[in-house]
Length: 178
Image (cartoon, rainbow, N blue to C red):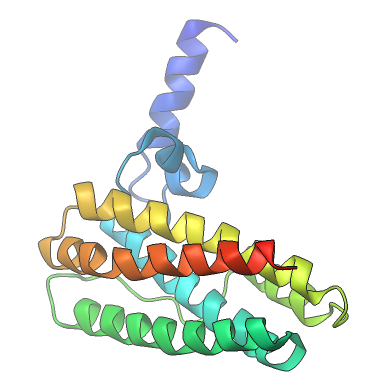
C-alpha cells in the first residue's frame, strides 16, 4: 500500500464523528495510538462494558468455582454502581449521549458462548474474558481521563480508573490460579 493510501486510511479511521461509534474505537486504532475516545464512544463503551461484566458474572455465579463466584459477586456490585453513576452523569445535562441498554451483537455472542460453556471448561473462558475486558476498560478510562472533552466524565473516569485497575489485577490472579 502506498503512502497516500495509508494516509487516506488513517484519516478515515480517525475522523468519523457522525457514526454512533467512531471507526477508531471499533477497530482499536484509538487504543493503539493512545487517543482519547469521543464522549459518545466513551459512554457507549463504558456502558457496554458494565452490561457485559454484570451478565458474564451472573453466569459465573452459576457455573464458576468458589474464586470465580467471589470475583463475580464483586463485579456485579461494582459494575452496577458504575453503571448507575454513568446513567446519572448522562442524564444530568451536559452529556447528551444515549446509554445503550443491551449488548451489541459481538458482546452478546461472547455472553452466549459463556452461557453455553460446560462447567469444566468455564474457568478458562471466563477468566481470560475478564482479563481482556478489564484491559480494554482500563485503556478506555485512562484515555478518556487524560484527554476526554467532558470535564464531568473525565473526572468520573479518573475516579473510577483505580477500581478498574484493581479488577484487572484480580482477573489476572484468577486467570493464573486455574
